[in-house]
Amino acid sequence: MEPSRIVSKKSLGPDVTMYRISAPDMARQRKPGQFVIVRISEQGERVPLTIADADPAAGTVTLVVQAVGKSTRQMAMLEEGSILHDIAGPLGTPTRIERFGTVICCGGGIGTAPMYPIAQALHEAGNRVLSVVCARTAGLLVMVEEMEKVSDEVLIMTDDGSRGTKGLATDGIRMVAGREPAVDHAFAIGPPVMMKFASAVTMELGIPTTVSLNPIMIDGTGMCGCCRVTVGGRTRFACVDGPDFDGHQVDFDELIKRLSTYRDQEHAAMEHFNGGCRLTGSGGHGSEG
Image 1 (tube, rainbow, N blue to C red):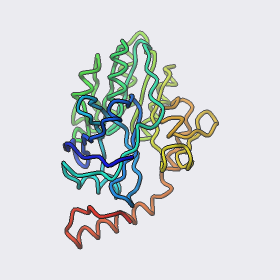
Image 2 (cartoon, rainbow, N blue to C red):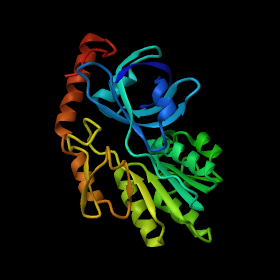
Image 3 (tube, rainbow, N blue to C red):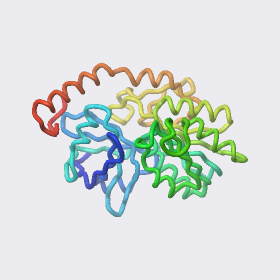
Image 4 (tube, one colour):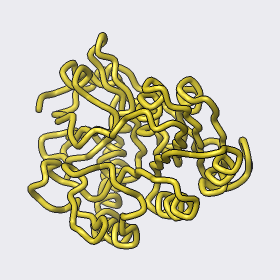
């Protein structure tokens, strides 16, 4: 782990920011599906973030971060040139990439960011890539142009119909699968509820499905056990056994319940942080706690 500089910062939508981070070794080594753990300060929370892209020549990795809690909101306040205390990775088992044939890549909301390198690798492996990019509303869609470059077809779905076709991720999967003679594999990344129902649909359609899980995580090396999930009746650890798993075998109800374990503490931390920002009028770059 070593300090890394924010090379560039770009807003992708409400509370969603794309960062290019200086990390030469990671840029050379990372593979689709892998993630990093970032700390903003010495006392900071360890935040797992999937690598959305990498540029080995420039020595940078790209992270897309949604500001939903204290640590990610602190990160959103950092400017270009700011130094992250440390970044560890690449971590996790890379996504299995092979020539399946025809594949569906479904990204929901910010889940499209980690889907992009997977779709890119599948395209380069010779697959026919049919992508479903979805969000609640048009302003929450991310990396659509990037997905278009690595896909044979992109279907955009929004819950409210503000862009593309009105409907859910599951509707998009059914639409794409319904006009294909066969779909050989599907990938889905997004909110747990979206992945749960996407996997239910692909099971009904008989399409093997890979999902990427992001449970509560601390060390990222399999030692703490916080990221445990149940897959096929067995306990697995998302940080080392995943983050990719068979979507038809994941106990999504357990995962969703576990994600709410520290909800009260998260709310309290946000209230304390927001109160501190109002009192000091600062960007909140101090240590956490």
